[in-house]
Image 1 (cartoon, each protein chain N blue to C red):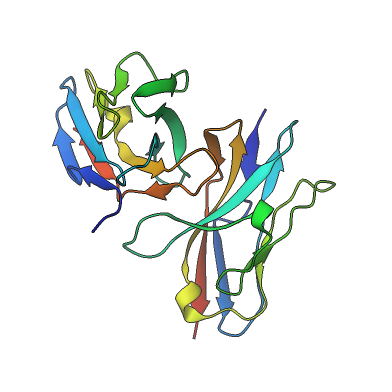
Image 2: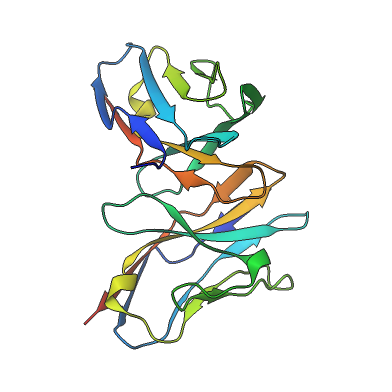
Length: 108
Length: 113
């Protein structure tokens, strides 16, 4: 079954500390993975996608097919990174499967 | 605001009533998606349109759910005979095509009492 798992519902770090939000997926085809972010009182928005291999707001994510993971990392967390983060897997051309999300809190 | 617009933002209805939500996508976006999000979960894909054609509807939750996009612009999602379990946030998103970023609306929060 196609599934995205985010094992941590809550993650709290101090400002300046490294942060890693975990995402594992289950998919028999060639995966296309995304990270979405939702800041307080704002709409859901795309943060990054694995095929772009880009760094956005200091965040990176590497697709590891062997471990079926797509963890989101940032070396030095900032308070403005506090938000809800969702990992998503695209199946076919349209069906996007989202994980349950991780709420990141960056403490001052 | 030229982003995806959803109306209403909140809807409270009695069980058994029908409700309809509207989504206005970003202009010239050919693809339009509907999702449902329940508390503590990520968005759950329901259906999508390519222009006016509904290309996937097998993920609609039951035959009480239906969606239209009659002129390839705005879309409506209707839920008939609402149940308490339908209480959720209903999200709409649009994209230029299958390969470009989908932009989300702020959602319609439905409460069935």
